[in-house]
Structures are given as structure tokens and as C-alpha cells.
Amino acid sequence: MSEAGERRGDDSARPRGVLVAFEGGDGAGKSTQIARLTRWLTAQGRDFVVTREPGGTDLGERVRDVLLHGGAVSARAEALLFAADRAQHVDTVIRPALAAGQDVITDRFMDSSIAYQGAGRDLDAAEIRTLSLWATGGLQPDLTVLLDVPVDVARARRQRLADRMEAEPTDFHERVRAHFLALAAAAPERYLVVDGAAESGQIAEIVASRLAATGWFGPDPAGGAR
Image (cartoon, rainbow, N blue to C red; front, side, top):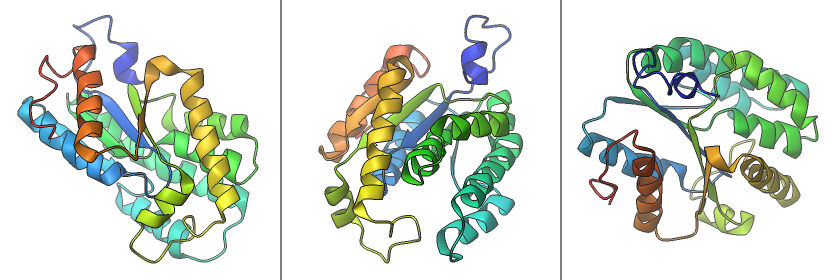
């Protein structure tokens, strides 16, 4: 459970910040939906931080370059590098922002490690989850938005040279997609699964409506989401 979630029952103690993670395969449309959500948050008068994994910190950007463009990395080394990036990210960006009352919107979080390294790399997904929880000190998103897109559709959307992860074969990405869906099915209260092939504005409305329904961001799901 996220720090915000742990404290939600005690309004005097909890920070106002809410952690929302966007997950999905490469080409799912996360960047577009994050940009739309930031407009909605602005309309709600929220103070927020937008970040990403890997990256989001000076150390994380160096790790990102190694992971995506640095040549061959063994599966276990890859998992550890992602965990190191996440630990630095949580300690220096996410927790301080939440404690200051800022919402945090992150492009990827621990579910990416569980899906990509656990399922995609055929490591033990439960071990990768344990490693990620250790790296975050138990912090999990209040809501994870999973943009689900067929692998062939996502591949066709990419308009740049594939990085090391994107260049993996179709069966790798199929395993990743299936595991994302399994994670969401196991904890539906914490996930919003959206058809990432739908019209972009429609997706934004679905995301804003789910967030508005929680009461975290105010009652108007339409303001600024389009």
C-alpha cells in the first residue's frame, strides 16, 4: 500500500499527495495520457510532480542510459539496476513530494519490473516483487493505470529506433502484456485497465472519472481532461 493509502483513514495525519502510476507495454500511449492528466490536475488546482522510470533523478538517468542503450545486460543485473533506480527515485523524488502534499504521476513503477523482468526475462516474478517492495520501502501507487494495447499495435505506433527493451521479440512482449493484466486482475481495487487502442480523449475521460470518483481530486471529471 502507498504511504498516502496507509494514511487515508486519518485526514489529520496523511499527506495530501497521491501516487498514480501509468503502466503498459512500449507504445501503449502513457506519455500522451500523462500529459492529458496533468492538464486535468491543473484544472483541479492540484500541485503535482511528473516523473518516470527508469530516470527521474540524476542517478536514474545514468541508469536509464545503461539499461536502454548500453549494450548487453544480464537478466539479474537488469533487475537490480531497475531496483537501484527505483530506490533512488522513491527516496529523493516521490516520498518527499508526497510528504509535501504534491501528487506524483510516474511513467512506470514497480509493476514494470515485475512484468518485464519477472515474466519477460523468465525470472521469478514473486522475487522481483519482493525486491521492488524492498527498494520502495513498501510504497505502492494509490492507483495504477494500465493502458493495454496488443503488441502488434504498440509496435506499429513507435516512430523511432527501438531501444534495447523495445527490440525484444514478440513473445517477450506478449509475456509482459499477459503479466500486466494478471497483476491488475489480482488487485482490481488498485488498478484501472483501459483499452489503450481507444481514442485518446476517451481514455483521458475514463482516467479522470476514476480519479474523481475517489474524491482525491475533486468532483469534476471533465475539467481539463480533454
